[in-house]
Image (cartoon, rainbow, N blue to C red; front, side):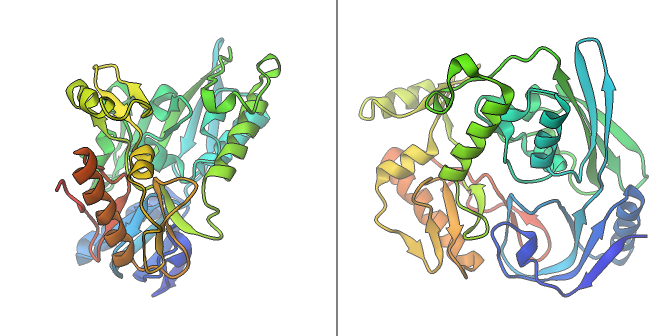
Length: 347
């Protein structure tokens, strides 16, 4: 059976924005069977449900009238090959713990994704990425379970439709499915990914996986808000990907904007730079504010409510659209009383 049932408890400690809202019921699950049992009860009684890991990429908009299922299904299996280690990881494992575990085991290659919050399941759904590495670069497969018929479906990497902060799991496999495990391949031959932000932190002669890990942890701690002080969901907006035509227009009067050429010829530009250059003057709505050290992050300074965070996000969107003719798309998921919804649509 499922464990640790909690009735009418606040979700404040179960979402990184620290929004103080409630759910009808909160249930922590440690087995796939428990997950299926809860789904069947919800389905038969027409009660909404949502599955969360660390609640690190969501904004609850109001009290949730259904069951919040907290995934704590954990376990790691390792298979050694001649040139690689193959890891099968259950979806309730914390991503940051996995990175530390692989370094301890002497498996090198995940260090650039240090200190990213959330669980393994959301890493696959979101295609997390940082400092030149994305989840898709190491993924071999994602295992789903159909909660209706209890069948496990393996989606190989080439069918996951991974793209920038996106995957097939955000679109096709939502209602009635759950990510239960992922397969990751870590090559035995270590090839460091060494980007500009690391130049000041590491002596290239002494470069090692541990040095990269320590440096990225230091950078993230300096750059990102402490969750114990400010509630937040990391980057609130995606970096916009624009056409070369739009890029030329932007570059014609902003020559120093950070950009990244994409495989298809489009251009990804820095959303944080756009917000910085708009030069918002201490904009805040109640306790919702722009984080000064990283303008892509919206923070809950203490007691912000969802409406305040939404209003601030909309102000930023409209301002950037007016000045740069660029739409900032939210990276996070919005949850109302019944489940995930689309908000802040193109203006």
